[in-house]
Length: 231
Ligand code: CA
Image (cartoon, rainbow, N blue to C red; front, top):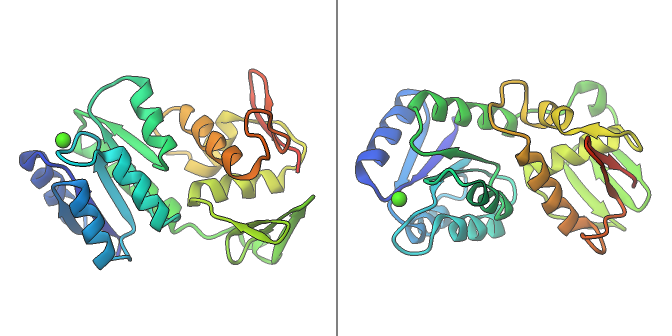
């Protein structure tokens, strides 16, 4: 069963979200502050997905996200952003979130996003790919069994989404891939967010694997289209 942590200081919203997630069959923990999230996570490191409101009384949702990511690269994180500004969404994704939902949200939309993320987090690699233990590209190695990227034998810590983008790159070296293709491959056909999520994840990947992320050598930009792996 998928274990979900809901962090929201407004009790009426939190209770409503928690109730509906429980009805949908999830095991749910709840927190009213970022500090409480970190305490709960220490006691329950098997949490699969965290829903984090941005506006919180102590440390905000972004900082909570950043600290959670530092402890766990692979859990799913969805930010609940109160404002509709693009900057705030992008900010959340930069801190390591996998997705965001803008408030006010319909409970059906939130449940759909949670279900989609839960499905992606538990997705297994293709059986055709599974026969291969690892893929090599220049100084990079992608271990498909351990779902790990190494550069010169040194592991690079990736989120699940980042790993899946790298897997798609490794399967298509030197081929321009559009944002829509990457979105479909990694986030799935049913993803209802926008393509910005691809750019932010690419930005994070570049920070992790490029020598100079502003002059990327491995993850090239294909102008007006998307990205290309030049490993
Ligand atoms: Ca709040």
